[in-house]
Picture (cartoon, helix red, strand yellow):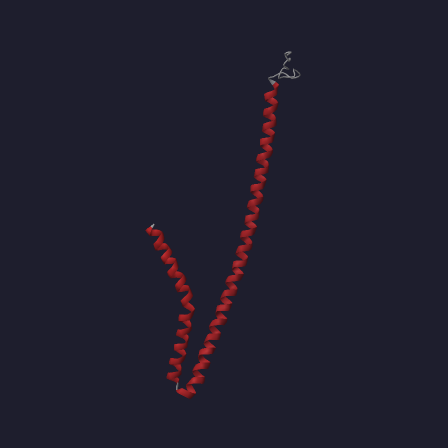
Length: 134
């Protein structure tokens, strides 16, 4: 079997000393391009998050205003309901009995409204106690 002639690794066109310098300038250029792209990506991400925060603040302000308005309307409607019930029942059964009936109805409605959040709070306390045991 004839021996193959091995080609030199270097083509001989450029001296070996200049090759690492060319590679380093290429690497520096790639590094500069990569860091530039990363800086641009970070700055665009920061701009996006700032815009998102501004939108969230604006919408939360609208939400708070609407919740306050809804609370005011709810309070006014409950006040009108209580006064109307007191006036309507007061003429037929007396004002003190009407007051007791309306108060009982309001307390029953409050107990019904608080029941679901109270159960959720109790389950949360049970989870916390379970985590402490482990």
